[in-house]
Every structure is written in C-alpha cells, then in structure tokens.
Image 1 (tube, helix red, strand yellow):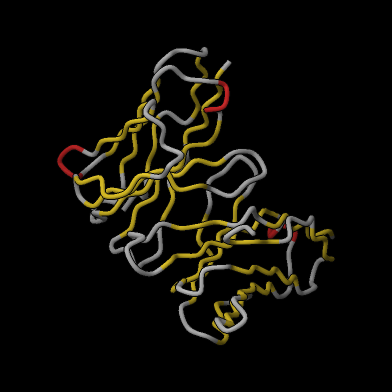
Image 2 (tube, each protein chain N blue to C red):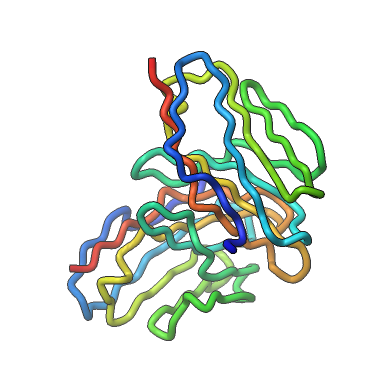
Length: 113
Length: 113
C-alpha cells in the first residue's frame, strides 16, 4: 500500500489554458474525493466518486471543471480556461467506506499566471 | 456562521506543555469528527477521529467530543517543536452527504523550545 498519489505535484499555467490532474487512490478504496485548498483556509469539497459514478458535486465545481473516474480506479480533474482564482492546492482523498477516515494524497499545487 | 469554526491562532506553547485546540460545528446531524495535521506546503495527515461523546486517547493526543455543545477538541501533551503545524478540524455529516468532510480554517500551532 503506497498511499494516495497525485500527479503532477506542481503545475504552472497561463490564464486561459486547460490543465488536467490525476489521482491514484489506495488500491482497495472505491470511494474518492477531490478538495481544493487556498492559502489560509481548510480544504473545500469539490466532488465525490463511488467506483466510477460521480455522485456529488459542489457548487464550487463550475462548468469549467470536470472530473472523471473511468473504471473506478484513478481519477482525473480537468480545469478548462483557467483563471487566476483557480490557483490553489488540489487534493485527492480516498476511503474504503463513507464512514471511514479519508486519506489524502500529496496534492497538486496549481499556479495560474 | 461558518459550518466548522476554529480559532486560527497562532497558538504558541512552550516545549513540554499541553496544547489545546478547539473546534465548534453548526450541524447537529454531524456524525464523525477528525483532526488532521498539515505542515506548510504539505497535504493533511490524519491524526485522530472520534465518533462518540467523551475522550479518545492515542499516545500524546486526546480528542474530546461533546455533541450537546457541538464542540470537539484536541489536546497534545508534551508538545514538541515537531508538532508545530496547522491543525484542521473536519466534520462529516450524516444523511446523504456521501461522507464529504467540512473543514475549519485550521489553527496554527507553534511549539517553541
């Protein structure tokens, strides 16, 4: 068990570009969450997957954001037409059951210039 | 009123002292409560979770929950400089929330030698 992994760890992009992040959960965990964290704040929930089904999305997830989890394994989060306000740490977490604790990956730090 | 509130600090304690971190939450339906530690530039790391009223101890850490007062706390005994970090309180609601976590803004703890 190598824990939750995320790629890339850092991403610098220009405003208007599209970016895609990847999350690989702990292998036996079929539940996966994406959160976003800005400086000085706690993480905020973005979206939840149970296997390949996206069951909940936050109002924070505008139509520029899309997430997928094909085959219920890894997940991707894409941001289209990035804006400076998208600069944040994007965190992925996984768990075995919704009542269990969530384990976070190292995060992807996005900087939009 | 924020859903989960923490004193942002910073809280400064001398090495060897007890650090007391507090958190209040607004949703009476909340079912489980988590404390995460986050070092600067890193992702949250789970320290403890608690579901039932009372105390739960794990090594130098004790989590305390009072559902009637909607209050959860974390005590760190024999504080060490390596405990210096931001401590995030997270709450998981019941019902159809799919287990998403709602975080406070975090309390910055500094342990000075």
